[in-house]
Image (cartoon, rainbow, N blue to C red; front, side, top):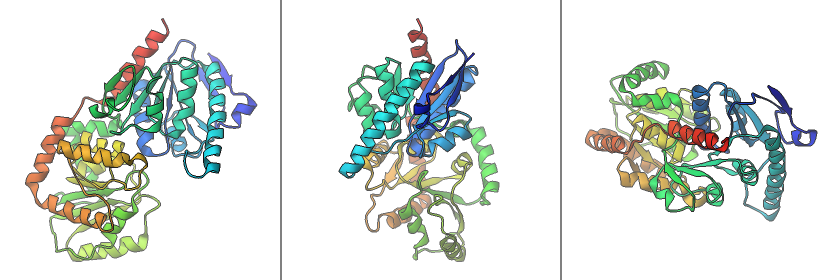
Length: 402
């Protein structure tokens, strides 16, 4: 084995400065960050690599101020944090972002020269740009993953330079120029992937009913806004004032850590209780597999990773795309999923989120519509995406060592 330690000037931009490598083992760099949507697919691939070849080394490069640092540590992967910021905004912010990108790229180049990774796998986001650029400069195999229907900036720029671009939706392939495009779906966490098995799903549902104190005889509406929460969806529930008693309904509401308000939760709990509706609110849960196993319908945003987890878990959705998302990614995701028949869509305006809540109640009352959506989900499912991505990575690594 050999121990690589970053230079002092390089270490200024990294949170961790040590990495032990075994000479003959595969070394994979995963990168991507900003939100859980970019991070969880990357970690899902890294976990499969570790399972298939425990002697392989995997480390994560991302923003030192992003959530990827904490998540990588929780999953047991060594993390290299770069000081970065997103592009856009004022001239000063853009200049600052470019400067940090340049410094981060130089630091990553130095690191790559010492560690000699076999492959770089990126799930996008501005935090992945330095590692992608460094891999191209050093001719290290690069695999990009695009989870949105409309490709993001990193995918657009590096698709011509990548060895393979994996996509969630076939429609994405026509929007990029790449040597090779493979539709894999989106890698999801293993505990959610396991919900494909109906026996596992039943077991997880039983655990979820206990975990969240839900009633087995009621239909469950799961409401969440992704890793960052969604204020408008929270307000749609907390400010509702027109509901008839609905004894067959229960609501599991994940508000987001920043959106949780004890007073509002207490008030709306009383409101729903008076109407014979079970209401459970949490800031966040690490047991998303249990929440999905309990859900008959999900009311949520249209972030690609979140909605793909719904598809894998077999949960129909009512989507409310984030109205001001960059490049309208969520709008394109939602529209395509509606065309496939696996989701309904309500666009957000002044009353959009409240309307979406009302429509979700109507869908739960119309069991036939939910059954149609469920059948459409079954037709759209792909084999486990993480395994397909890992096979591509392993093949590229083997070829690069010849």
